[in-house]
Length: 220
Image 1 (cartoon, rainbow, N blue to C red):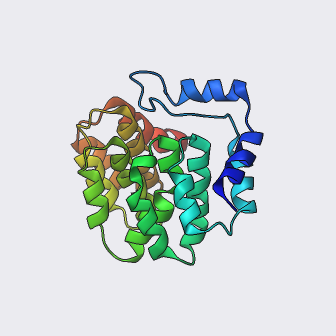
Image 2 (image 1 turned 60 degrees about the vertical axis):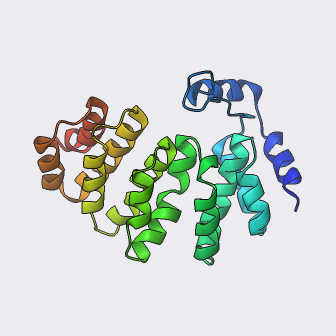
């Protein structure tokens, strides 16, 4: 099905009020990290319904959808790629890494990074791709690197996350601090002592430390 029909279906779930809220929430105004992005206001559950309905969309059409100016269209493309990764990982990983410039807000990173990039790297016993992203000058590629480590965490491999969080201690953006704090919290669910050792031996940005310690506070 041509992507224009998929986009039309996405837009049918749109809501002008929700679109305005998204524009504020994802900071699309001048100076914001999502500057220039466009929303129609469709909810995530409805976007997932669209993706499920169009699960047979070709790779070529999915890539076009991922390059679309509409934020929700890019979200649907990533959900489609997650599903296709189960049977065609090489094709998916090629599209994903060829289009990271379109994975340009935190929700787009977070929905797929660990399920595609992380899963691929973990299965193939390699972290070179993740470190290349971590050393990029692109904010979203940095966040992809951090969130990708969740695939390793869920396999009991915690050191990559620790090393990435150490690498990003002095990163200038709070969205990286939040992502690191989230991943450290996941580490803490598996190894509290490892988390505490890291926190006690480094000066963490406030928001990173706050996110990381949530797991400790909840256990008290």
